[in-house]
Every structure is written in C-alpha cells, then in structure tokens.
Length: 125
Image (tube, rainbow, N blue to C red):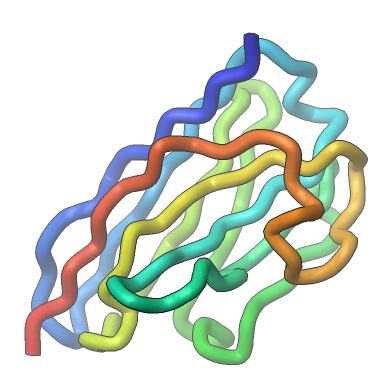
C-alpha cells in the first residue's frame, strides 16, 4: 500500500518561508519522479514543481521559479518543497504526488499515480 504524507504547512506572513515535506512508503521511492501540486479554493489543482528520480532534473511552474525549491532524499523516502518570499496568492492546499516512472512527464496531474492528503498553506498579507 503506497502512502504519501505531507507535513509542514501552516500560516505565514507574506514574504515569509515554509518548508513542506512528504514522506512516502510502500513503493521503491528512488525509482519514481515526484511532484508537488496545489489547489486554491474554487480553482483547479495546478502543478508547482517536479523532480526526477535521482534529483538530476527539477521543473517549476512559472509562479514558483526563483522562490520554490524541490528536493528529495532517497535514503529517507522523502521529497521536500522549500518555499520562500511567499505571497498571498500561494495560499492553497499543497499535495505531493508520485509518478509511475523515473522522469518528469509534464504538468498534468493525470501523470501521477499516487497522492498525499494535502497540507494547508496560508499566506497572510
């Protein structure tokens, strides 16, 4: 049984930072690419960042470039999303997701096999 559990969300003022973690189990973590998505109230889920199985490649949505950093520790079966200079428009539930292969394959959520339950990030102005 594959499980993805996010943590690290919370309330932060604009300009602040947060670090999200996603601990996984039930699958050989080092074999699969990982991604982060977010969903704000009334909006569709959107791609935030992705990382290949061996950390060789990372990908970011334009909204997070220069502010967000995705990383992973295969020895800990964990993927991270470091967010800085947060803006009120970053407020959303953040989800980590696991792909079915080692490589980034686009921004579509349909390309990911397993999902966490999400963690709320709220940025106050």
